[in-house]
Image (cartoon, rainbow, N blue to C red; front, side, top):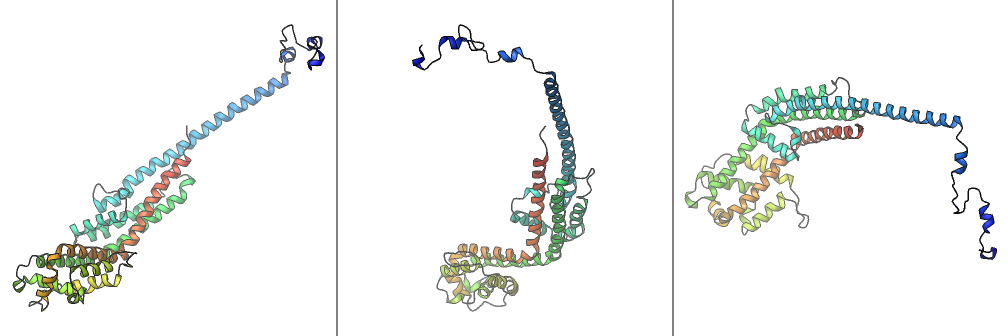
Length: 340
């Protein structure tokens, strides 16, 4: 190779340190000739020892943190199983657990079922036993030993307040339970009279209970006799008892209150004689009773929902807050429980 080729002369390459006949330059050759000074080895040793010590300390700290969280969570599970669920079992029996409901409507349905199964004794049990158990759970949420880690303090406070709210709102519900039962019994009487009305063979010789239903529907729909057919009545009931943005329908609280407080109440007494409009009304609407019955059923359910807002709406809110607090504690535990 010549200098004109842009390369180094062979003699120059041969003179480079560590280059042999095969150009085997060893980049570590100089280090092999010169060992590290002993202070460098000492520094490396100290650094390694410090790292090992730090890792050991961190591992120990994680284990200790885990023990604290695990101890709290064990207490928490026991508290919910035995103290919180003592309240729910008081309400719903041995399978009672507030976390098993997915929607407030499910909780309300269970509560209503328990009420109507024993309307005389259940409200008293709720007020004298179940409310006390909810308050007891609210107080005992701070009785953990050892105390809960600081990370749970806010959530435990929320949980305790929600349990206290459950107790207070349920007590209000129990106070009004008697009236709810009475309203439901009156409603059932109207439904029963409607079934009698629908099976009338001869309008001139109808069962007096059928007159009762006629009285109810004329109270609820004053212009009933001016309606041309069942379809018009169905559309009227839908416009009062359902939501339909396209048609501009909204649930009418005044109509529902009138059904509950006036029409159902007035129709409890059976008329002493056949209403003057009975035959014409039955002839016009009787064949569509199934559809009309469904429409009235929708109105009665809406009426019930509206009437229970005052005493169950706040109870539902407290239930949601208690379930959320319970779930949040588990979330905080997951975030703060170090991996091994």
